[in-house]
Length: 539
Ligand code: FAD
Image: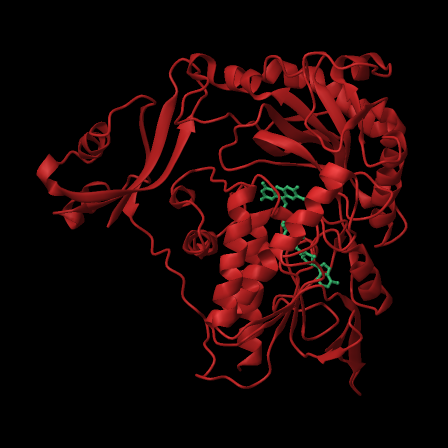
């Protein structure tokens, strides 16, 4: 099979134009093209009046060797790479040796557990939150009734932090082994729409994610895996050998039991602050890590569509428009859009009482009225929160608590109109943009709950964003806060063998350990770490 990259056709092209374009590109007669499949489809909207669809296609030809030879110097015509997944090791049939443990059933833990189960290692999955259906009710409880369940919410429970999300499934990680493809293939087997395999910027949306996560659990259980929900890992038993080597020996669980375990994947996500503290207290190597904080911004989706797609706004193939923008400020900081959700809503994303955190989600249809995105400012441990590995957590908590105060102490988010924010005055009434955050938005001043340098940076960036996306800095646009859980404030550093630098048998993984940022990269990291664990366990 042969792959063509960068095949461009007009947005409104007919179906038969694609095989014709393939034949023209390869300079072959139509009968020489046996069949083709679309590997990926994206769009190039740099010229709003002439938007192009960009294809990557795999073709079976009658005379493949001859065509490849003719295009030997063309980087966009190459043999199709083998993207199939190959297990590095497999357990002997009916493995009854040690069972690896996975802490956390987010995308990282889920893929780690699936790979371990497919290798025949029958993992045990420990998850502090509830199974996804019950968890959904608790999560909506905060949004509808202002009742937070600290162990079952947007951050904690089966499916992890990305379950109530836009379900964006792309990442900029280097992926020479095509592990991202393995993740997408498993997601489709579990019920995700087929188009995630071909879209350049695939997404699933919340509703489908919930059923997909349940289906993956059934697969893992059918392979001998075991889930323990509503069970939090409270402490880690670490033994030290005569030569000083430290090794994980087991886990103390919230039901009072002790689980002996010598191979543990720790995929706890960026909000497991209590778990980070216990690991730190037990001497596991942890470092402070940069992250970002800021606000969520909302525009009517139609404004973004028009700014991005001009006369093609609303086109079904293009769907609701997304954006990704950044601005380098005079003070040296970078302000950037984060986790942009077209046609979605802003959600209450705290996991701790007395704190307010924003984030965004959408359904597969992305049909809601507003577009939302984080607008965040990079911050650095040395400059902004010195004081050791746990200082980033204290920093996040401080601003989240101030947001709770500024919102009225009832889980409403503090909000401000963009025009008032730039003019440094409190907002008192909404204009043409109505925010979507539930349980509600309390108009005030966002400077009450963000550091001065963050306010200053965002004030400089918004007019610059308005020049990139016309209408972006309209005075009625609403911002809510605070967006603090952009990534983990710590890195639980691991070596080349994926084990903690100073605790054998402990495999820090995913976003919480500082090795991923987003659903796809967390899932890919889960595969890598599961492979490393299995290779070590079976050697
Ligand atoms: P998590 O998903 O955080 O999972 C960690 C799991 O560990 C949790 O289920 C938690 O309950 C469990 N846990 C924690 N501590 C313990 C303990 N001590 N004992 C037992 N269990 C424990 N990313 C995207 O790529 N696209 C998006 O569209 C997107 N939208 C998002 C929207 C929202 C509202 C949020 C909150 C996040 C979004 N993200 C998105 C980010 C994405 O969800 C995370 O990057 C991803 O979930 C990280 O995966 P993870 O498995 O490493 O950790």
